[in-house]
Length: 106
Image 1 (cartoon, rainbow, N blue to C red):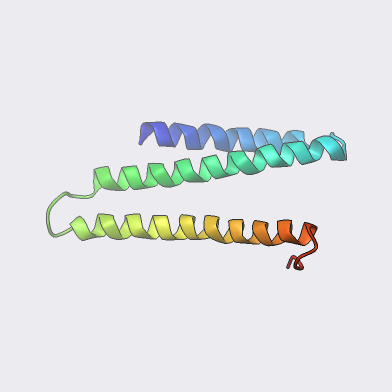
Image 2: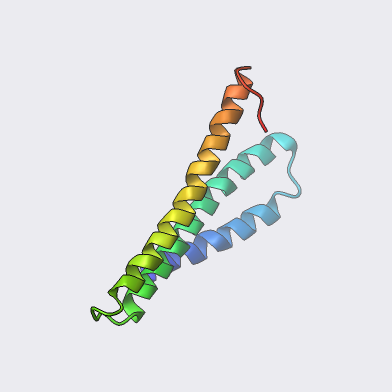
């Protein structure tokens, strides 16, 4: 929990600093900043999700009656974040194919 929480906190703080510092830059360096910000955002989101699941596993009672609750929370976390990741990768693949003039990007 502590490791995931620290990664989430400091990458989120770096994101804020990075996005605020973009303002005075030109367009070519702006693209580089946005690429870095995009990757840092995924690290921050993954770390926050990991910290949440870690905290839930520690705070929930570990009796047989509530064991299903942890697995349900874990499934929700994996399905929502994993689903969003897969969806965004699919949209990216469509846009890359558009650059090759195969299909139109929505």
